[in-house]
Amino acid sequence: MNQSRPATPGQILEREFLAPYGITQTDLATHTGWTRKHVNQLCRGRVPVTVDSAFILAAATRTEPEYWLGLQSAVDLWDAENDEALRSRLGQVRPLAA
Image 1: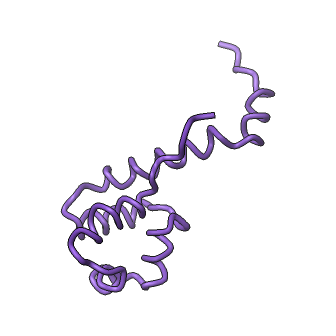
Image 2 (image 1 turned 120 degrees about the horizontal axis):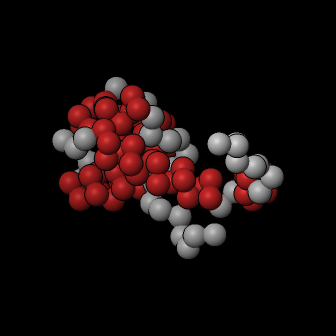
Image 3 (image 1 turned 45 degrees about the vertical axis):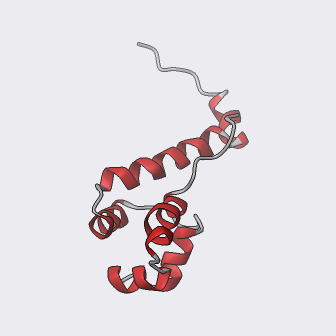
């Protein structure tokens, strides 16, 4: 198992883009057209960044969609690598013959 789980895109959003500028979750919700509940769930890591939301976050933060998708991918990969059921199943999979 890897050491510690990477920060979620929502944690990065809160820490690097909202808090330093005094932007509230309500402000972001209003700006993006998302509900405040959705923004809160995103910031808490309860909903993942999708391709669509990556484009919206990129437009709102003057970043690139790939930035947000990369952060989400790091979390998803860590979660998969640390999933015992998946690890057990992978141990049973044999490579296809070449």
